[in-house]
Length: 598
Image 1 (cartoon, helix red, strand yellow):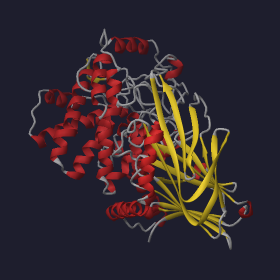
Image 2: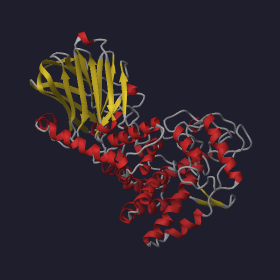
Image 3: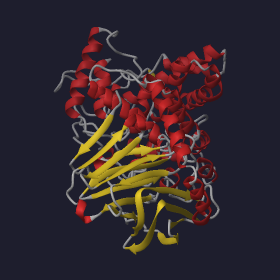
Image 4: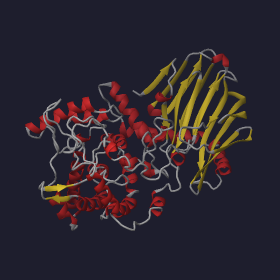
């Protein structure tokens, strides 16, 4: 049985749009108020948003600090002056205590995410209110939209492996699809770019966009090619309408985008590529089918609960659509919202690797035979290693790879991400990958944490301070998420060293710290009995932004049903507490469910 998502005789709206993508170029389709909308996005456009875009460019722009470690010491003093008050109700009250904390963490320009371009199919007035159906056929990786009855138009859309969106239009008579529109509308906090619209002939239409970021000028060209039809372009506010002046019962609309990453003159060089696309539509269809047939042959499963089965299929499909593999922007992997991060409030544009939402996106790849997607995550993380090494020296005056780059004291971030590289080895048993890619990262992180964790004579164990649970706070000693993720990093680094026959000098220190780390913080009896809490510094029953204290339970499995009865009771109480005291968000439910299953 194939899987689909279908809207019949209803508006679907942007937040229920149907996704298409080839990994780096994406579209989402929805029907609303008699218009079929197709906003598009391309990673080379969306993330080309500053003067220094690629990790190697960012490294060149990051000077070596005159006083390494000065920033670390300044933050420690600030933390010492901001001790939390017991019972404070804020989920992120470190901001109240430390209002100047990292307000503009990497010089990003708020809201400046270039749009690739929104498209819209407009229909003859006589089809207004007609029966309609918009469907995503998951295994075929295509959408099909039909409108009308006796007079009917059908639009089959898919994204080729090449960066070409192919829409095949079939209409019972000419004129039912009246126009194809291009839109580039302003958005909040955005300096609107220079946009020009050009019709080069009766079938080719170009919009050229120019952004200025610092000293860099970034240009890209979006192109529309009619195949088997003719059109006339009319500019409008923030866009252009291509009136379909001549078309038979079947024709094609091809759309693509060309950036100055790959083309010296995108607005002219792209035309030759569009010529090639026009002459190879059937070949692109064949390639598209072969790719997705192979994809689902490798990942198909059967689940008795067919709703869950649909969720499984569409999520595996969607991640491959937006993973970023084989693209210039591989360091961003799938971003916070994939290729469909096209408007507020989703338009966050986070650096992907430190944000737990991204890790949730990739969590399912190990159970679905998609180690190729796990490698996408691995490659993305590894692209930042040189930056994190310089950051370790500059900010902390520490050796190795900074586990908190680019957010000071978010110490759980890189060891959490490194778990995925260990999982990739565990599932693949690829010793070559372990030795060349994963183990050097593990070792560099261990060097950093051996410098960051200090033995505390008063506590009698190795401690880290100040430490921050992401998005939560306060500035703490030994957050559960940091201690558990670093402990797990140490554990699998030692396992990897044994597998590879390594005897690096740092490993002795790793073992010493791993066996003498802080205990996890536990609340007093409260709303849900004793439960894990962020840290010893956090008030009991604090409302939290995400269930970080489940890390020892899931994914690392340090504690669970195999633990002693008191620990099991604390874990159960923790899940109950988090169900009631967590912010509703995209990833909380899955983490709670996984923890409860464990």
